[in-house]
Length: 404
Image (cartoon, rainbow, N blue to C red; front, side):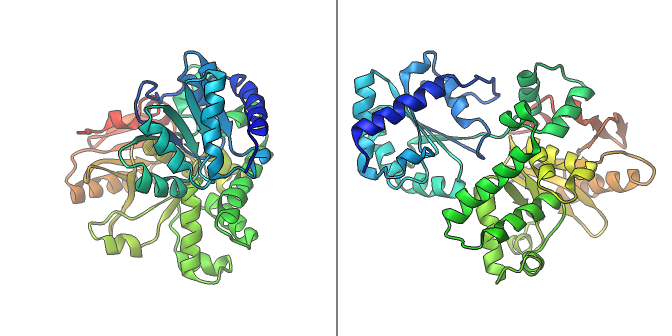
């Protein structure tokens, strides 16, 4: 338990800092007049609380509480009603709970507020812990929004730059974590990765061997876009079983650090049995924590393209046939709607391979088009548009595909 007096002191301290946060124009827009609970999820430090801060025409109208404050270590389910009392005493109209997923019973409090018609905004950085409670207690009562580090357009606004190859090169190098863009200290990204692995994974999942998780994070960051098998990785990292390695990878996905995309197949069994490919939530984070990734410009661009697709789509696969490969296949409402190939530089050695990858994927899926993204080349090859990356990133990925 925590006393109301201490809770009020913490709220006062936190709200002063919260109101000083620099507002950033994001492409996502939260429904400020919704009757539903609004939940913003995403990797740590990507700007979730600032996004919520933006929706208030009068920021002081919201009571903000960040549960990462060490003074809240004794906060319990029974303490939640005190927030209502403090909110009313301060004349606030809404409650904003930041990183609340680790507090037992938060969903009960959220449901109670919703049933009273009161506004509640929540952020969280663990997909599993959020979805478990959302699916059981809050079905139909919430709207969940995923937030990522800055897109290219958001980066341009944050840095006050114009869209061109030069500004895209900066985005390519520095990624989209707001604080890193201000300090450009690689150690910040290394510390952030380790903090997430230890606090969000090891501590919450009772994993004693933190070193194995850190080695796994470095391995995935170093092998972005490369196929891997759980059994090989378990042997390499000396993890006791393949099942444990699968669990570890699931935990890293739940923390939003990495996505592991499957091979496209109409057979679920083949999807499960075949290797997956990892992609990191931020290219600068991958480079800062990698043994080799920063030197591979092609895979770094591939990771960035994946993130742009992921902002619009959840069902993304890689395509492989006996003859060729295509980097990304996108599904929407169970239908294949898009094919994307990424190549740093189309040259005589790579041209036939890259075009064949899209052509074969088009033939197998029945699609009549695809797109080939390069660093700076623009062309039309055998009916396939070749687009410079900086131009392709200017529009949301949904704009390039027919989405019903």
